Picture: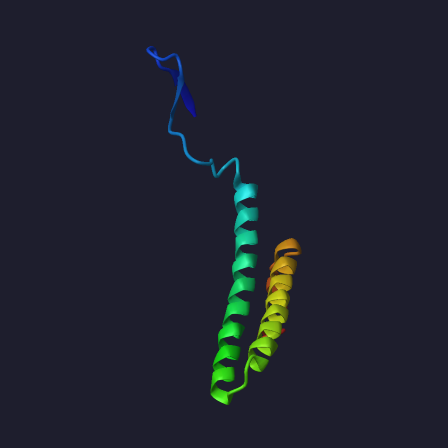
Length: 106
């Protein structure tokens, strides 16, 4: 980034400035993306199960039984999915072409 000094105010002006520089802030941006993905996954699972439970409560005439059960299932399912995503990010397996079981060993 180039900085120039304005002759009238004596302040520095930036040329080509951005909110962040992806090349230098890549780790920060990648971590933010992972955390955002985990949060949205958890909220999505819980909200989906909330609506399913609410619909089942309306359909059966019960008051809050299915909503409570499905909220708990949504929390458990969301935690499971988030755990698998964290494991995938922190311990990536190397892609190996030798794991192709469809190939004939000739």
